[in-house]
Structure formats: structure tokens, C-alpha cells
Amino acid sequence: MSNQTPAHVAVIGGGILGTSTAAHLARAGAQVTLVTAGKLADGASGRSIAWLNSSGDRSAAYHYLRLIAIDRYRTWAARHPESGAYLRFDGALKWAGPDESFRETFAFERAGGYDAIWIDRAQVPSYAPDVNPDAVADEGAIYNPGEGWVNLPDMIAALAAEARANGATIVEDAGDARVDVQDGTVAGVILGDGSRLAADRVVLATGPGVPAQLAELGVTVPDASPAAFVLFTDPVPELNVRTVLNTPRVAVRPTPDGRLVLDAGWAEESIVVGDDGSITVPDESVQGLLDEASKVLAGAPVLTASRVGAGWKPIPGDGDPVAGAVPGIDGLFTLFTHSGATLGLILGELMAEQVLTGTPSPVLASFQIDRFSSDAQPKQVGTDAWAPVPQR
Ligand SMILES: Cc1cc2nc3c(=O)[nH]c(=O)nc-3n(C[C@H](O)[C@H](O)[C@H](O)COP(=O)(O)OP(=O)(O)OC[C@H]3O[C@@H](n4cnc5c(N)ncnc54)[C@H](O)[C@@H]3O)c2cc1C
Image: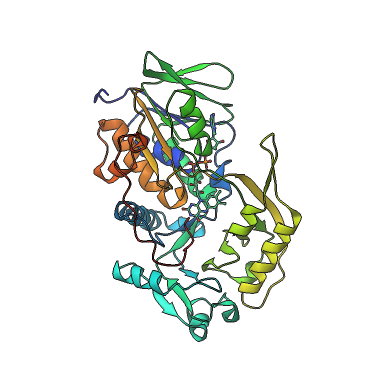
């Protein structure tokens, strides 16, 4: 890989990762063009719970990445006061299912200095007045005051505006774009209509589309992306929900326009995927999510569905982010990860730096594609000593 500053960088994919990368490249003075198949935020980023967290058990490297990821959002919040509409750190509450305990999770979070408070039912109204105390587990719950949520379409719009202000070009409705590789080196991007965009670096950030696109180039990235959906309720601003909830039967977070976004593992498993790849969400799952959300919210409000956001949820085969240069293709980089809401700003920043300098940040050392090669070391994982904590 040449370390010379690239003349032109193309980014494929207008989700949080592609837009963040484009914004950071433009901020650094690069000439950048972002192309995306449809509209910005029309993929996983437009249908995400988008809980900002480093909750649960994972490698030290991944935990560190998530902590600095949250730090970047705090900086964004401080520098962009208007972001208070779409980026909030109002805390999150989680509790275990009937045959589980989160006590060891709590001890782990505290031991690592992660902000966590154990609360019993009687304390719920003072920490999370939007929550029904009777729904909380007998043992109590973990309240994480430093966690929050981001409404990614708004975040993406803000990053796109910044990128444009710094000279970037953003091309929506570009159709299915492909990386143009000639003699093992990127030449640019082939757009959906067959036209070519020349570039001497390309960042592939097409969310769940990444593994298939890399496979076409002869590069294997294990893929564990499931079909998934979130349910957007009709507006209920009078509820004033602020806390992100991760409960055994439903996850809940508010939106800037007073709706709630809901999802759950059981609801995800109910999705029917057709032979043609079509995704169908059963009506019972929609109603089930509304009912479960009503149970965990103070006052048992009546909730109604506005729309379902369904599609593939990008998850690498080993669960960890993929962020770095694509082996064997000079000038090609990729970003493919779950928890992309949490990681959006930091991965865009570090990817832009790697594209411009040719050198990966040590922070990304564990997240390179070559970890999937046959002679790679087994990945470092944390302990599995406690009940499964929601991993997002
Ligand atoms: C149900 C659900 C819940 C989640 N909850 C959380 C959470 O609580 N916390 C968290 O941190 N993360 C969460 N995530 C994960 C997070 O939302 C994703 O990791 C993140 O949005 C991925 O962003 P992306 O930019 O990689 O992909 P996407 O948002 O999918 O963007 C990819 C873009 O590329 C475009 N594209 C695709 N193919 C092409 C092509 N060939 N040419 C041009 N453009 C193309 C698409 O149209 C799309 O706009 C959740 C995800 C889902 C689905």
C-alpha cells in the first residue's frame, strides 16, 4: 500500500459508517465522494435501536473501542448543542429474565469502572420515572447513567451537511455500486448505471452488503447478519420516555418526534425469510412488542404501531467489528460491524486516518480482516460467567 496522500477517496454506503468516514475525510482536507444506492440512512442505520453503550462482556480491545466511541459522541454533543434533539445521554436500565441474574454483570461493570448503579424496585421511580417498577426483576436492575441513544438518520444528516460544507460530494440514488479493481488495485467505483467514478482509495461501507461484495472480489469475511426489525410506534410525547430499556421481552428507546422504537430477540426470531430473501414480520410480533412495551412503561400506556423497519442487521461472523484495509487489493478499505450506532463516529474517524496515512491505528489492530485467515491467533474473549446481557 502506498502511503502517499490520496488524490480522491470514494466511499460506498450512506449509513452511519460511510457518512462518518466521508465527514472525517473531508474534515481532514481530502477530496471525497460518497455514493449510496438510495437515500442516506435507508439501511440498518434507519432501523436501529441505536443504544450507545459498552454493556456486557467482551474483549478489552473492543470495550476500549466502545468507550472512546461514546467519548466522541459526548464531544459531538458539546460542540453541537442542537444535537440534544437526536443524541441523548439520559441513562439506560436493564434487568435479567426470570431464571437469570445480572449480579455478576453488575460486579464486572463496576470493577471496570463502567458507570453502573444497582437499583431495587422502590428506587426505579427516582432513576427511571418512565418505567413500571412492577415489571423489574425481583433482584432489581442495573442503571447505567452514562448510556444513551442517537437517532441515526439525524446524525447522518448532520455528518453529511458537515462533509458537504468541507467540500465533499454526496451522490444519492447511485444504484448498486461496485468497487472497480484493476490489476489488484482499486481504480474507483462502478455506479449502478455502469458509469465509473475514478478514485485512488475506496472505502466499502455497505452494511450487510459488505461480505457478498468482498466475496465477489475473492475476499472472505464470515457473515452472521440476521434478518431483524424494529417497530416505530405512533407518537406518545406525553409519556416523556427518556431511559433506554433493555428488558427480557422488549428493548425501548425514544425518538426525537416522540415515538418509541421497539425490538426484541424473540420478535427477531419470528421473522419469516422467503426463498427470494423477502422478509415478513408476523402481525402477532408487532402486537406482541406493543404489549410488552406497555407492560414495562409507567402507567401501562396504550401504544399503536406506526411502521416496521425490517432488513438485515450487519454482524460479522465472530461478532467483532471489521475495520481496515482489505488484504490483496491495494487501496481498498472496509467497515462492517454490529453496534455501528455506538461505533459510528470513532470508526469513521479512525478509518479516515488510516486511509489518509496508510497506517492503521493500534486501536484497530484486533479488528483487521486478516484475523479470519487460517494462521490467525484465536481471538481474546472475556469470561462467560454470567447471564447473557443484551449485546448491541
Ligand atoms: C434491529 C437493530 C437494532 C440495532 N441496535 C443497535 C444498538 O442498540 N446499538 C448499536 O450501537 N447498534 C445497533 N444496531 C447496529 C447498527 O444500527 C448498525 O451497525 C449500523 O447502523 C450499520 O451502519 P452501516 O453504515 O454499516 O450500514 P447501513 O446503515 O446498512 O448503511 C449501508 C448503506 O449502504 C447502501 N448500500 C448497500 N449496498 C450498496 C451498493 N452496492 N452500492 C451503494 N450503496 C449501497 C445502503 O443503501 C445503505 O444506505 C442495530 C441494528 C439493527 C438492525
